[in-house]
Image (cartoon, rainbow, N blue to C red; front, side, top):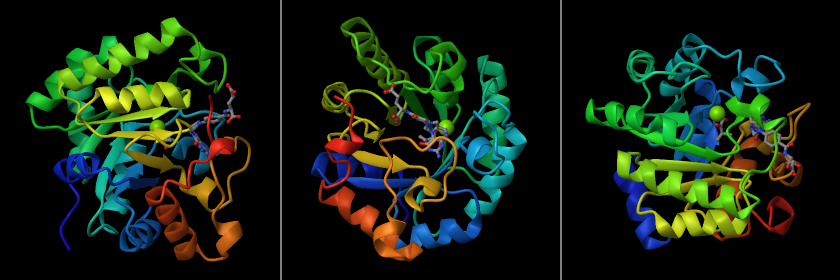
Amino acid sequence: MSKITSSTLLKYKREGRKFTALTAYDASFASAFDSEGVDVLLVGDSLGMVLQGHDDTLPVSTADIAYHTRCVRRGIERALLIADMPFMSYATPEQAMVNATELMQAGANMVKVEGGHWLLETVTKLTERGIPVCAHLGLTPQSVHVFGGFKVQGRDAENAQRIIDEAKAMEAAGAQLLVVECIPAPLAAAITEALTIPVIGIGAGASTDGQILVMHDVLGISSGYIPRFSKNYLKQTGEIRSAVRAYIDEVAQGIFPSDEHTFN
Ligand SMILES: Nc1nc(=O)c2c([nH]1)NC[C@@H]1CN(c3ccc(C(=O)N[C@@H](CCC(=O)O)C(=O)O)cc3)CN21
Ligand SMILES: CC(C)C(=O)C(=O)O
Ligand SMILES: [Mg+2]
């Protein structure tokens, strides 16, 4: 079984084959998701909320992400493994290089960073030095206190255009993947079409190249924030592996996300 790389995902995009991503934080879930065929696993800083019980992702450290990345790495045979860089761990290019190195050496294949124009130099420097980067635009949860809540982004024309410009600039700077979170579906569709690199959506409609969800939402065990765009697949299947297969199948067939999981 050949490993998924950024080239594989680029090929999927060209072929119009939708791919699936899930968060994972330990070896057992990672192995189950990987063996059922999830293409991308993310050690998300969402672990600050779903594992640690915080109200946001800001308390998460690079050491936390590195620990869970080492755990998830041991459960993977096929999937691409992305590690989130936590809040303030990439505030300068120098900090980014030190902390991204820690995550790559913990077993990540790629690191993910939240932000737009201010982050371009960092994306270029990481990529030049051999660290693949996934960019993250739209609702970037590390900025929740700037946004004033977990709110849909890019609703007005000016902000929508800024996000499109930032997406193109991220690709030009060397980003190999892009996550767009909580933006109107037409905006996500425009970004997906404008970029060569694959775009993964969460709360961004059905037109992106791939979909990602937080595993606790898919398995119906989140408390507190349960985003409207997520779907509990355990409820309809009753078994974890079947739930994951249902998620993969619905993404592949374009059934998920439907209108009820989409902002317009
Ligand atoms: N369990 C879980 N699932 C996630 O998807 C997730 C996390 N945790 N933690 C980190 C971030 C935070 N995220 C969130 C959390 C809440 C909303 C939310 O409540 N959104 C409103 C939209 C409000 C509006 O219309 O502007 C919603 O109804 O979904 C969205 C993203 C996404 N990520
Ligand atoms: C929701 C995804 C994209 C994420 O960044 C996380 O889980 O931290
Ligand atoms: Mg994250």
